[in-house]
Amino acid sequence: MLLVSFLLIPFLAALVLLFIKDNKTAQWIAIAFSVINLLCALQIFGNAIPDFDAAWLSNVNSRFVLHSDGLSKILILLTAISFPAIFIATIKNDYKKRNVFLSLMFFTQAGLIGVFLAADALLFYFFWELALIPVYFLCSIWGGEKRIAITFKFFIYTFLGSLLMLAGILFLNAHTLDHSFLITSFTKATLTPAQQTTAFLLFFIAFAIKMPLFPLHTWQPDTYEQSPTAVTMVLSAVMVKMGLYGVIRWLLPLFPMAVQGASGWVVAVSVIGILYASFIAIRQDDLKRLIAYSSIAHIGLMNAALFSQHQIGVQGVLVQLFSHGINVLGLWIVADIIEQQTGTRSMQAMGGLAKKQPTLAILLVGFALANIALPLTNSFVGEFLMFNSLFQFNVWAAAAAGVSIVLAAIYTLNMVQKVAYGEIGESIQKMTAPNKPAQAVLILLLLMVLITGVYAQPLFTLTADTLHKLFVK
Image (cartoon, rainbow, N blue to C red):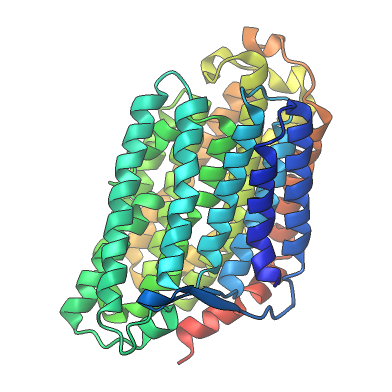
């Protein structure tokens, strides 16, 4: 029943919040429910959690089956950490109809957790849509001035991906012996190389849109910019991981021949995307867009490492799924504090944060150094393993991707210099100390960055079973 509780808690929270009209009460209820879910998530360490299996769509031979392994556990943990951190850090943000906003956030959390637990393909698709639909309303109602056009673009991209994935699911179901939608049944399906390639492409495009992977990334920077920052945090820290999760859970084990054949061009496209996003990030003045393009580059590296097809690369990605989520969440919270107090995201209008608010500047520098994978930070562990895997796959691909290390240092340190140092900018001049809850969240997140950077073994242990399934036949 523990797996079901991960879903029931956010569902219950979402329903309760719809009836809470007082903003302050709604905020504290949201924090309480999210903390309870985090406490449940902490129980997964070192414990074998039994599957949950119940009847669902019997007419089409689909069941409500939840299963957890290292891959799902690490992403559930990231999700469970992210939501209370977001709710606490944005406690002072002003939202109209805050209870509805928070309710939709919880529906999104339930969908995300369902995606990471579903062991039935139709159930997976149901939760995939459940995670996306609330985001559409969150962006279109509470977003920026261009929210309608940007949200429509986001909808078109994600809707197309969803349709392709549904077609892939039905295609696989038609080739199973028992016509079941269980992923275990899909692994036993006998597919010709051509059929594997067809199914691979249907799923890969859906996952590539969600990551997002170049050149299917164009919805992301605009959506991140126009969305309320709390929603952007969810999109960047957790939701993009759905695509990478799909690659590991579906593509690698189900379509080995297709993956082998596609690995060359997928790695090439990923590396192009890494360099493209890094160069664009260097040119950004908008703080949110810089973080958005930085995220595209990091996700591209993870995808390239997965398709390099080495165990060490997949291990690096499994660690980096968690590390990147924590790092980018910290950066978004700092960016949100600055925007809420100054009313601007332009780095040209900033400067002197270290003189005006030294504690916030120190936290910004900490997450910035993690973003460029400085040794002793959490990202160094994952990136070292991923580059090692790419080097074994192709030296030139590794060298090209390695240029992104320099580019990341350029745009990240340039951001730190513009925001934190120099003369105090007019916008920074009016800043006051960040509220205590947000500051506490940032300190805890930075501690995670440092602890898992020095001692990452718990993450390796947690994900060992996933590696065993993929590489030990």
